[in-house]
Amino acid sequence: MTQTMAARNISQFWEWGRKIICVGRNYADHAKELKNAIPTEPVLFLKPPSAYVREGSPILVPRYTSNLHHEVELGVVIGKGGTSIAQSAAMEHVAGYALCLDMTARDIQDECKSKGLPWTLAKAFNTSCPISDFIPKERISDPGNVTLWLKVNDQLRQNGCTADMIFSIPYLISYISDFITLEEGDLILTGTPKGVSAVQEHDELQAGIQDVLTMSFRVDRENH
Ligand SMILES: O=C([O-])CC(=O)C(=O)O
Ligand SMILES: [Mg+2]
Image (cartoon, rainbow, N blue to C red; front, side):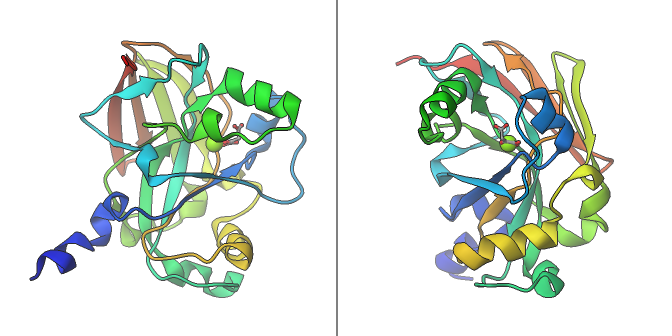
């Protein structure tokens, strides 16, 4: 096998430099806890591939925030690209899943919201997208009904079920692909259930997806 072929193994999709498309407010309980309206259409934003961080490396708190939140989310890894994908064909475009955290500088996001500015520095900074190993599609028979949980220093903070998503995975794939062409190796973060809260330097985060997989990350302060 050549180097190029090895580099394109989907189980290392985070190395491909593809898009991370995030869905916000996709759980009513989380929209309510942040006093946001329940959306009638998916709320979308992006993270760059430089946001990825893998187990063994720390989540770094940016210097400009004093309220960094965890958001545990199911990530959907695209295996076959497409534009204007029909909902009925959407799952054929999925290669697998990943457990993800959408790390959010909540104070910066609040400021951006009040000024009507984009969320980039609140959501897209380095290490804002911790991810698990790749989970092949066959390992999750019903991605629309799996539990996701997150603990901070052994205390349970989030415990939700993807059955509570407002917009389903096939709907999201179809909706997004109408506006943004999906490519092999892209990742869709499907939104967080309630229970988001602040993390500090030295905290230990542990998250899991049903009986499929767990992952752990340490939080550190950015020191430059
Ligand atoms: O920052 C937010 O609340 C929007 C979001 O990412 C989510 O709901 O997962
Ligand atoms: Mg989120």
